[in-house]
Image (cartoon, rainbow, N blue to C red):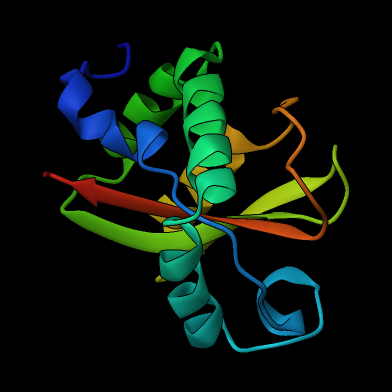
Length: 138
């Protein structure tokens, strides 16, 4: 049996990848501020031209990337909602990144795995942290 199809509105998280932030060793491997403080910085950064431009570029990349939408559908099929995840992509190099999400649970791990192992556009500077939000159902 294949993955259940979900309307495109549920994949708004692909396009709503938000802003730049710095986080602590516990969250991303980068020394610095706490996850909560970094999230506040991300909300401020998205209002910058550079942050908003890269957010759109990254969101478009993942929206068009093969396997992302089907992978998200599979995660939703295996772990039915509702879900509200908050987190960020952490770029330590232009090609090395990971998606950190809270709350940490099986759905969050499944979703993070869907985004790994791809080749997104390089961020405008390093280290770079781009906010991510997933809400299902919307």
